[in-house]
Length: 298
Ligand code: NAP
Image (cartoon, rainbow, N blue to C red; front, side):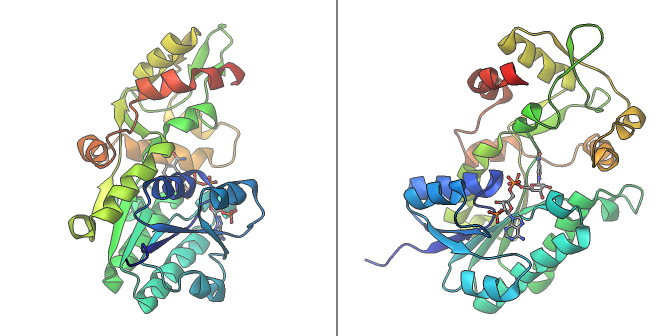
């Protein structure tokens, strides 16, 4: 019997790649080559224990990528804009993987892409962490590479981190997310793996497609209501304006304000298709019921 085809998973020590690597390992159709710059990391050791091959490579280093992508059937690629907040560097990383995959004849690449907002809005909005991924998508298409783009919505996990509820001076908690009452798509990043697995198993249906993902689309007030119910804390939409959000003092606030303006235009995120690809993907209600304890420390 032929050995299972190998899929190289970038970002395997992180949120997206970690979810993909674990879903593929659990399923067994593909062998997993987990790519990391630091094979001694705890997350890499855990993936090795689960059966992955751990390979050291760096998206900034062409030679290491050539070695890492030899003899693979497929690739899951995620680039991390936030590590350097440098769009040119992110685009170069993506193009490097596209060129090398093309040269080596990789059969299917699933790329964690997003829209080129700058292009879509004729320069009115620029959201570098989206725009760079949009440019990488375009480059794969220009090469004619067998690529599927999966466009993640806001992770539910952001509610435990960058968009966590903050205590207001009125004693209750608020979500400072400037959506102006427009519903926002979301999904647990832990459910990406099942989606990517289904796409890799059915290349004929998904190569050449850009797939917007979502498992729930709620207003900020609705997200806050679900959180309140599960935590017993009073959490509300602060109804912060885009302008006030831009002035919040954390790196990337201005860029994220523009992202929310783009989200308000309701980019295409397909809940039915996401749930068809991963029937176990959680709604926000389900995710909250499993994660409410994590909110105790927020
Ligand atoms: P993460 O958990 O911070 O993990 C980042 C991963 O990238 C790590 O595994 C790291 O691997 C790898 N990496 C970074 N630089 C690398 C390099 N030069 N060479 C090889 N690997 C490298 O990040 P994530 O959440 O999975 O993904 C971040 C991306 O998701 C961002 O670009 C963001 O724009 C996008 N995104 C986020 C959201 C959201 O709601 N948060 C939504 C849509 C899209 P090692 O350190 O092990 O080498």
